[in-house]
Image 1 (tube, rainbow, N blue to C red):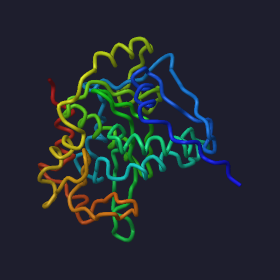
Image 2 (cartoon, rainbow, N blue to C red; image 1 turned 135 degrees about the horizontal axis):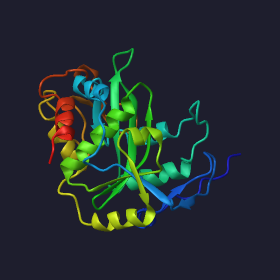
Image 3 (tube, rainbow, N blue to C red; image 1 turned 30 degrees about the vertical axis):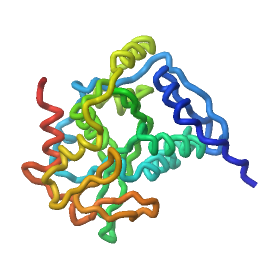
Length: 272
């Protein structure tokens, strides 16, 4: 018999931890307990210093992916927890999953999804990321990619959305070579805590509202649904069985002069 799953971590506890520079992890998938991490050094991506390679700009402008916000949060976090060839174990236990689903329902955890048409013509989730937001801070938790560049596109969209919405700090927790290549820098935990304090207050809009600005005019009939969330182009409701709509595959790959990808690149490359 499987051991019972411990109750989810309360939303208030998670938010207090994040405001204090601490976050939970599990040793492995089956763990019922979590431990709390306060890194000595912290990785962040300055919102005005995201590095877009020439190839990534090309991918963004071509709109190889339809990008949505908060349309498949549970799918994203479970995909991030899936075993990988280079990383068979995960720190995302079922208790972590349920805790962050609760945080998402409370409006403090968000996902960015990348979709492409599958062999059957239906939209298929191929990459994305999720994280925690409070005040003007977004703490990126994990990302995944089932096809080349999907996680990079999701990160580029996240940075553009944060800039548009008035966020101030993108926390990446631990430095990796992938993040370093995208412009991440490392700083001491004490310096990170000061940046968190300086990012108090609320952004002037939600990530979903920012998404709608970039997506406007991309596909006829685009409509936002849900609190702070959005879906691209035409949406097929409850297509994943959990009530989260996914993009209509007919709306994918329609790059044009005013396409979302072009708007994203222009937003990230314009100087302030």
